[in-house]
Image (cartoon, rainbow, N blue to C red; front, side, top):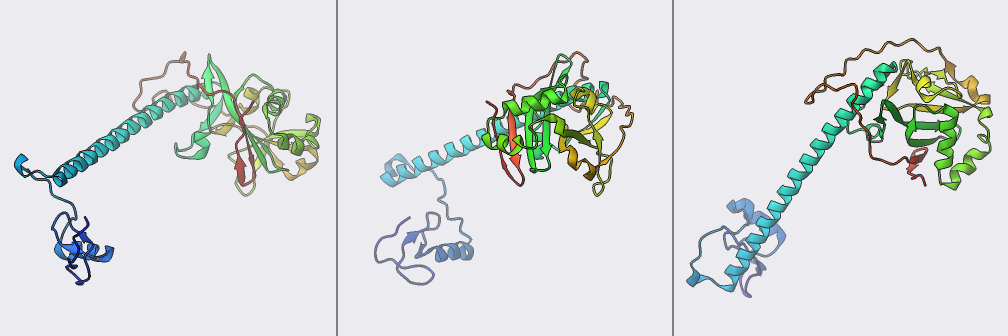
Length: 293
């Protein structure tokens, strides 16, 4: 609050510029305002008290309006926070149910599904859904030669790997991607598709050799998947740089029928996401997202 001319600061005796609305002491600068709060134990806020109508002034009405505005802001902020928490809780519960349905489908297919914590990017990018006992996977295609990652949503598990790769290329609208991949990847006869063995040591990773003519479902069966499958598309001339291993016969047990806070899932549950299919491209450390046309 601005003071009248001629008044001095209560701390340094300079010309006062402000008057505290709580204790009415005069100060000249921000430093003195802070010091007077510490020295006198002042909160710096005007106290709320009853004022008779006969004593009301324009300043009193201005303070009342400011108090009402502050109260409205607090109510609005609290309401937004409550609604946001409610929406986040509902979204988390819905995600748990959908993940439970997906896990049951993975058990039927002998796929060991590993879930990331909800705050991690890989979990947030997972748009895998289930419809009529058919899984539509989010798939990550990695081209090591260009250090390029291509994401595609809702890939039908019944498609062959070659069909899925062709579909991803067709849906990609960025010209630069076609230019980078057209030379070496013009024909799938020049490439092999690998799937990393998640049980192998990080310093010495091993890979499973995938069948381009086999379905997506068959190629990820008896493997471990981190949220969604990641395939490495490697040129045949570079295959010697990778250690290959044979698939093991996994027998995944159904231990996910109970989800905390939810009822037991039914076998005929039909859950699906409402997202449209899309392709995202990441170029090395600098990532740029692309939407499919």
